[in-house]
Every structure is written in C-alpha cells, then in structure tokens.
Length: 363
Image (cartoon, rainbow, N blue to C red):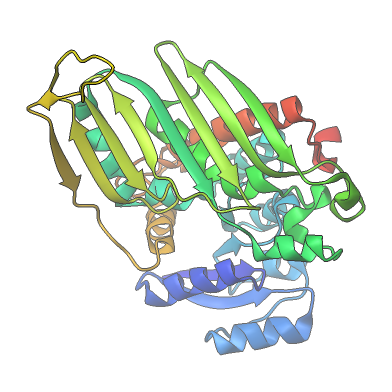
C-alpha cells in the first residue's frame, strides 16, 4: 500500500485524490496547505487523517510514502527536493519545473536518494494516446502534424478585471505555454521525439497587465517544430477556445483525433488513388476509405498516471534502480524522465524566442 499525501487544494488535486481513493494500491493520507483550516477541511472531506502546514513536517512524516505536488509551477522544485530529501517518492504535476534546470535537479536528487520522481503528464500514461501512436505506421511517411489545445481560462477574467491570479504570473512560472502548451509539447516528443529546431511566437497579454503578471506573459502561442522530413505545428491558448482537432498527415493517410490531453474520436482517412483535376473539377480519390479507432476511455485519466507511478515505486521497493523501474506498460521512469527534460528544453527555447522570463531562469 502506497500512502500518498498531496500538496495544494486545487481542483486538479481533488481529482487526483479521487483517483487515489479508487486505487486499491494506494491510500490518501492528507494534504499540505499554508492555510491550516483549509488544509484540515480539505483533508477530512476526502477521507484523509493528517493535514500539514509545513513542507518540513510533510517530508519528515513516517505516515507518508509519496507526495503528489499540485502546487503552482514555481513551487515544484523546492517542494520536490524537500520531499526527496525526506525519502519520499514524488509525482509532480506538469510541468515538473519552471525550466529544464529545475527538472534535472529533481531527477538527479531522486536518483541519489533512490526514490521515484515522475511528472504527472496524463496523456503519456493514457492507453488512448498510445493507440494513436500505434496507428502512425498506417499513415505512410509522415510529413506534417498539427497538435492543438486551446481552452479559455476563467482566471483570465480575473486579469481583465484587474485582479491577480497565479495562473497568469511570471513569478509562478505560468502562462499559456506552461499550463496548456505543455500538453502539445510532450505529445509531440512522445509521438516523434525532439525536433531539430523550432520557431516560436506568442500572443502576449496586453501591456497594462504587466503589474499583475510581473512581466511579459503569454495568453496563446504557436510553435513550428522542424524534423528532417517533417514539420509540426503546436497551437495553444488560455484566452480563447480552439475547436479544431489534432491531425497527423502521412503520404498514405491522415489521422485526426480530438483532445491532445485526453485523446478521443480518432479516425484514419486513407488517401486512395487521386485522379487529376482541373479548376472546375472535383478531386476524386478512388478507393479512399475511413476507419474509426476504438480508443480506451476513462472518466478520470489521472488513474493511469497514478497506476504507473505506483508500479514504479513497487519496482524500486523490489530492488530496481529508479531510472530502470517499469512505470506501467508504456515505459520506464527513465523514459518518462527523458520526455520531460526534452519538453522543458523545447519550452525554454520557445520562451527565450518570445521574451518570456521567469525568476527561476536567473538561477
């Protein structure tokens, strides 16, 4: 049984605890919150027994084996390092850190302590994502991909009203790329590996918001990633909705699917034989056909990352080195580490190109 505590009282933390409660191999101990009353209420309402107000107490607790970090991005590194120093395994909400350097420090500390450190990137642990990846050979030689995720954040209403929110704050290492675009970035790495180069542009929040955001920050953006024989476009937004599906285009077929964070409604359209046409003619493809993919479905996909995290911890308890520990059916801890580091390297470069700077970048 893995005894898990959480940090934070956000909606995503509540969803994670729901997954823990449904998992036979784990139990929820309690949460850490700076507000003691809120932390106790949050813990008791979800069946926990121990609330914490200090990271040192959580890290030293003999009631806790592992910690899920659902805190603001800028807090991840310091909190994770404290938990690791206390011998705790850590599952850290995406992105793992404010930049690649922070994530690397977490992984190195975990390796030295002999504990598991993983990023809670839901699609990489979702069988539906891997069903999409397994279908790629059907497309022939892949030439282009378009991965997109745009969702209007209610927190943007706070910004427009002149009120501060952590979701749009350079000091919290947040913004559209870090909170939404990261899904597109890690899906790209998971499907195709790291690109050889990239070009990024951001839709920056208006100048008058700088006092709230503590610097230049993005509300949306586009990244063009280049591969030797392929190009990919990543589109992401927190200040408008994107209603288009993701698409991967090969010379033989095109794959479309909805939801880069939770892949659904996937379809392969096979090209067939294309006849020549003129300006007034309608293109005809003889033998063209479409096939729908039956993707696995789960109401709370955090269950997948939790199960993989538990599997990795159990493997380490049985004597495996953390890096080599199987983390579910799709990869080892080392594999998921490499995806996390490659994604943060890409995002560091995208932020460099668009002038988005976090306090952690100066360390």
